[in-house]
Length: 123
Length: 123
Image (cartoon, rainbow over all chains, first blue to last red):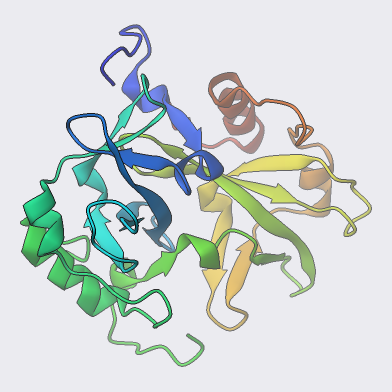
């Protein structure tokens, strides 16, 4: 977003899912800290509620999956990836799950919204 | 998911992207006619605008990719997949692209919305 063409209305700005899933996630200093593993979206609404991030190998955080509200991510054209507006401390305390386990998106989503102070998708 | 709790409001009904991408698409008669190849979503809004379907091997339509408005898909719990509310005739005349080519989501999206009579995502 830092160098985005101001003539392009942001609502026009579509991206294919295969350019989102697997893309790098950068911190505020521009360091690649993780990647987008998957998205959780409303079956009917088609609205992405959560992006599921992994930080394994970065931040020393391990291989768990971290669902974060979509609005904590901002797309940055200059790096063709997402920036995550979260501090290391926020991530360290954040809700997570083992990728080998099932995840309850209903209860899990409530926990995620509580943690980040975001408006629950489910309301 | 086949025995989903009826007390769960449909807006709670999240699905992980890896359960959408690659899932079968069924016609009105319950025949598997294609699959969801990818999604096109707003980078900032997180709203899925188009699902990209393939019908190769079904309908005799070949291997092109067909972007369709998200609202033409309905999730069917009983088959754990999407139904596509389009006739074979609609699909045969529909906008498509070669998966080996780049796709212009802005112009392409307008064409898709024109064809299906859907409200342009870009408005």
